[in-house]
Length: 418
Image 1 (cartoon, rainbow, N blue to C red):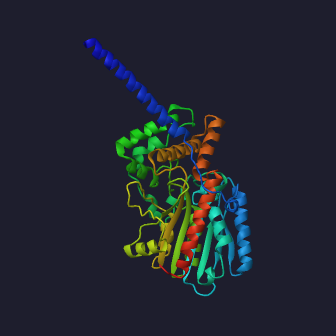
Image 2 (cartoon, rainbow, N blue to C red):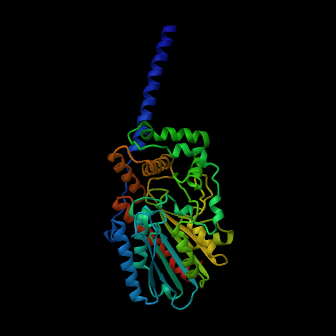
Image 3 (tube, rainbow, N blue to C red):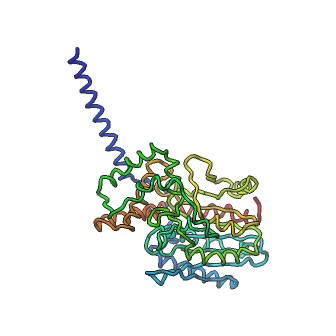
C-alpha cells in the first residue's frame, strides 16, 4: 500500500515537473518570440507619408510647409534651433496658417515629444497637410503644426533628449513643479534602472518577466505601471526622468504657442504618440475635463472609443505637453487630445512587461554601454519596433484610421457642431 502511494506521488511529481517545465517554456516563448499577425490591407499611398530617416522626414515637412505657403501666403514656416553639446544641426520645424477670415478656432498638431515616435507623428502630419488643409478649413480655423519637438531623440533613435529628459514629463510653466516627488518610483528604481553594461543574454534579461511578475505580486500591475510611467524628477539617469528644470525645447515653444493661440476662442490640441495600447489601434487619450466638456468631446469624437482614464489599467503622468498647452490657453474653450498608436499590445500583462523590458534595456545601454555590439543591435531593433513598427500593414492601417477620424471630426470642429 505504502509502496503504491509512493509510486503515485512519484508519478505525480514527475507530471507536475513536466507541466511546470512546459508552462515556463511556453511563457518564455510568448515573452521573447511573440509575433504579430498584421492582416490589414496595405494601401501604397498611405506608405508614402512615412520617411526612412529623421533628415528626410524633416525635409519632407519643410517642403510640404513651403507648398502650403504658396497656396496660403499668410502662412508662416519657421524653426527653432535646439542647443546641444554634441550636435549643432538640431532644430524644431513648425508651420502656422492663420485663419483667413474669423479667428474662431485653432488646431494644434504636435509630433515627436518622444523623439523616436516622430517617424509616425511626422507621417500623420504629412497626411493632414496633403489631404486636409483647404481654403474651407482655414476660413475660420487656424492651424499650427509643430514637427519633431525632440530632434535629438528623433535623429539618434531615442525617446528622450540629450539630457535623458522625457519631454512629456518636462512640460511645466513654473520651476517649482520640477520638485514633484513620485513616491512609488524609489520602490522600483533598482528593478528598472540596473547598473552596468547591458547583456541581453543574461538570465535577468531572458527571464525578465519572472522578476517583473514578482514585482507585480508585491505591488500589483496598476501600481507598478503608475510608479514607472508617471514621471520622476530625482534620478537623472533613470527612466521617465522629467528633468530638474525646463528643457530648451519647451522654453522655446511656450511663447510661440501663447502668441499664436491668443486671438482664438476654441483650441484643439492633438499630440501624436506611439507605443501604448492594442497593436495597430488608434487610441484616444484626453486629459481630464469637466463633465460638460466631456460630453461635447464625446459628441465631437462620436463613433470612437475615448479612454478617459477611469479603468484600472490606465496611468497618469506629470508634466505632460497637452496639459501645459491647456494652462497656456486657460479661459478658452480648450479640447485636449492625444492620439496614441499601439504597437506591442501593452494593454496586456505580457505586452506591458515586454514594453517595460525594452525601455529598461535601452536606458541601461544608453547609460552604461552594451556588453557586445550584438546586444546593442538587438536593443535598437526592439526599440524601433516598439515605436516605429516596420510592418507595412501596421503603418498603412494607422494612416487609414487617422484619415477617417480627421474626416469625421474636422467638419464638426470647424463648425463647432458638437
